[in-house]
Length: 353
Image (cartoon, rainbow, N blue to C red; front, top):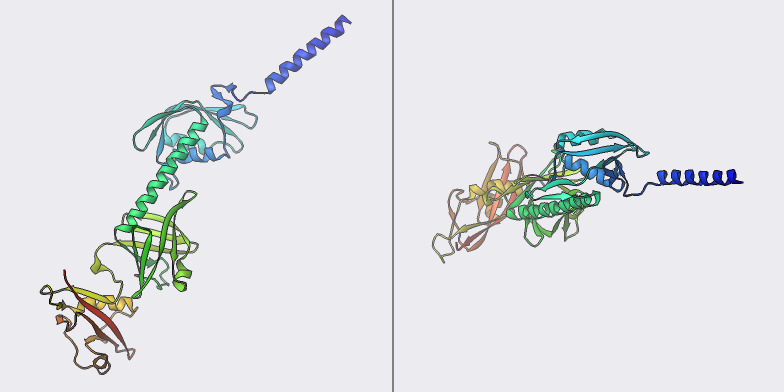
């Protein structure tokens, strides 16, 4: 009886010992890493850490960086330590993370020192603080990018070019974006209006464009466009297989919106200005989507439709004074080889400057 009692006590003790060893508490440490701070390779946090350590990738997170060195352990699926690393740099950290085996985990020996892109240093005590710090810096960085993009769009106008050289429906069209998110869009001399919103979808900068008026232009543009800021003067919009490059232009003489040409009065209040028609030829051809002129072609300016029809009384292209403060001029473009012509009305306006 006594032996049987001792056997029961012994087996109970062994059972408690086995249970205690197998039921690891989250606060228990393996090496110098708390179990609650273990990070699975397949987790979102692991991916974020990879982006912080990355140095040559477009997805790199630059708003927060680690101050090295610190210790990190690698665990297998059974939470057995399989490697120990002393992490010494972004390049070293990136290489280590890239070679962590699938299904394994990492454990960082907290606290670690970090620095924001504004130079502020701070201690991170655990993986929750690490996740929060990265999330906060990404949010702040995205808000800054949105603000920069909006300011960039408002500085000047943006000229469109097709990345597909076989397309030209919107070549040299102009976006003029206001600070309230509205825009004016000029294409082939026609004005359309709409709204423009910049925001992030996950980690990608996007611009949502909405034209107010239904039609082909709205069908082609009313989308969320992935937005890449290539420089202070250039950005790219992409939606599926369609992409446009937008180039900033701040000099009015370098782009065309409508066939309306204004010149300052020679004498204030006179309503009379001097117009140099030859300066308007590139805009007229561009807006009307006409071919450049060759030696076989001609262009002339007339005060009346009848004069343009019969090609009589052409006006000087180097110096013309208007006869009304706002006046219509008729432009005749002759293409000799094709044996065709176009008559295009333009508006000239004398303004007080």
